[in-house]
Amino acid sequence: MSKKSFLNNYKTEIDLFIASAFAEDIGDGDHTSISCLSNNLTSQAQLLVKEPGIIAGVELAKYIFKSKNNNFEFKTKINDGSAVNPGDVIYTVEGPQLELLATERIILNCMQRMSGIATLTKQMASLINHTDCKLLDTRKTTPNFRYPEKWAVHIGGGENHRMGLFDMIMIKDNHVDFCGSIDKALTQTKKYLQNKNINVPVIIEVRNEDEIKTCLNFPWIHRILLDNMNPNEIKGAVKLIGGKIATEASGNITEDNIVMMAETGVNYVSLGAITHSAKNIDLSLKAI
Image (tube, rainbow, N blue to C red; front, top):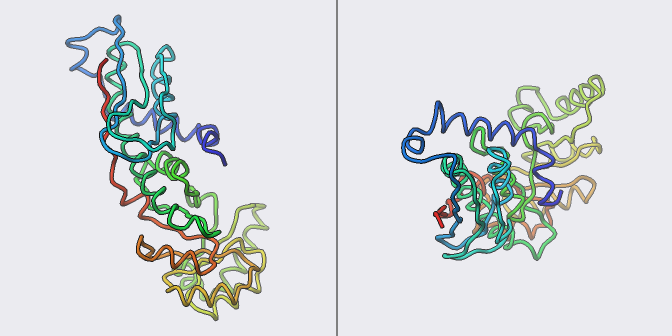
């Protein structure tokens, strides 16, 4: 999926997020602006960068402004995914005063958070770009803000894992233990997919070689998740799987060990930190 297609692919979800964000922030009205400004007058503002990073959320900002009032004039100066430095102007916007200021904080909150995620994602992905291993995000996102955060991962050069519990089957250790065995869990999963006529990828988490060998009896599996294994264990698992099923390493992956993990030959590494531990990038919307 290209960066430009994210909004089109998830427009319904983004629309719901925007509506909720406006309801949360504006309530029964922006009394501060209403008391001293007029929506009959237009003003201009520009988004300024205050610290270096990778900018993300420009396309979303434009979409939010246009959602508020389609007459906003939005001019992009720097596109999503670009490296930026203090003093850079990302965009200019002109529109009714009340609506401009009522939209300001929602957009800043989105863009600062998204830019922080894109920056960290870019940093981590660049460490392993000499390998064929791809960087994935996880479901460790902010409730009701998942789509912008995963959009930011995409902008930063990472790839999206599942969006939620609905678009992928991911059998983890608790599922296996509650079910009784990997064999039973996979057998029941296959039957469920056939009975419901559901076509979604299936990922299975494994903890040892015996579980891997069991998975190889189910070649329709989309990916084997090697959870909390060290690099030597992952190398052994990748060799055992022999390319028959795609592999993913997950658990306790950090900046210090991601290169070693990627160099094991695993196809993917998934990292919750790129969404839950990214530092916001400081941005400011200022009147021109």
